Image 1 (cartoon, rainbow, N blue to C red):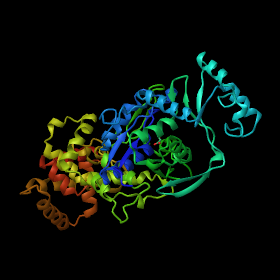
Image 2: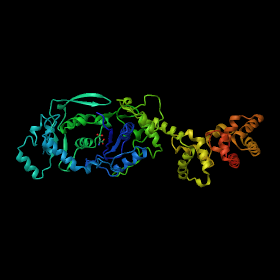
Image 3: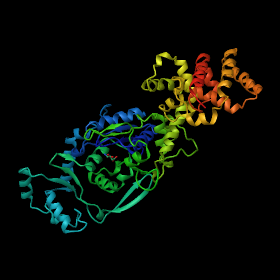
Image 4: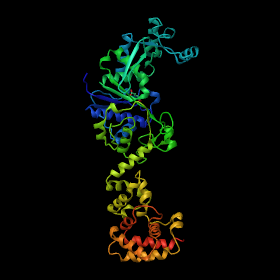
Length: 508
Ligand code: GLU
């Protein structure tokens, strides 16, 4: 059957969107775009107890930051709305009634205490064909009593009537066919009268059907629900238009075994959330990729490769390139280790690709935050400083460590480097160097360098010691880019002033 590709990302606003959820959203988006389809964002907020204020905005802001564009959703609108489940109560009520009328579901009055007692009395108790007639429901009780209880306003749930002993064949585009016997399933609660809301399973199936979703692409944790979802499609008579299912492999700990958790991030120093999250209840702050200095392109590229490969050895791929290459043929079935250092590597690579002037713009607030009055420096100066050191950074904030001396002259000098490079005769040699620098016809690095090197050779000085002592006065330590690039940017006066200060301050 040829149908329009329509996918949905269906998060529950129960907290900040986890990075695994972002990957799910991304794969949905790539698949939709690759196939000229629609991307729906559906907010699954039927579990009122787990609702967290701010979580929905957080989801929207995260996707927007990452460039995952939504075609239909709460903000975007669309022909299949509302896109928030709490606004679809009438639809669910109507569908629950359809199942009840068709005898595919029933009403159950068992209280939490009664269910608890049943569990205590029978190990591995499950509400199903073997137990339901001993419970309090519309199958085991006379119709008048059921009616009376409902009329009295007794809280009830609607349960799905699972017929035992049937083989349910579930197909997953990554995993192939799996046969599950219906006897292992329980009569899942589909609706609760107490809050007049459906449970996840009912709302999810009804919405996927009504929104004409063609492919359900979601995390592996939902795989166990797939047989139940198949049976629900069948009960509604919708099996012919049931979506295809794709359950994405888990994201695993970077080290060791098991699922990636927030604690791994805290332990190893990487964020597990796209944006910083301020927990409204506890006030706790969790790190985000955005605030930690990651570029959205880098995060996307990194996540895309956690569970998928392009089939060739391309690594750096823009969103458009990912869209062009994406297919489930190259998705893996096994979990993907969350190699966060690879995320850093991508960030480094994307920073290298960025225009120097643009990078300089990002550096300005960092300089200001460190107390530098950036109005004293031209855009060109900042841009040139950035271009000299950018190959040494993974994050914009690293520019401070690598380029601070272009903006603030050193007042302290590395002890270790002094010990190694500052000799008895260093001040005198540097005084000679100052004379040479003063006499240079041009301070351009390429022109200054041969003249200075020739002078060092002529004097018979130790090149390494002279150049490193020189560097120590300019930078404060023996690191940084090519020294004649540094001097060119600092300019003649500043270079000489720094050497003089070094001579005055540093004692061998
Ligand atoms: N609301 C579910 C979640 O939070 C959606 C699962 C699905 O995509 O079917 O992940």
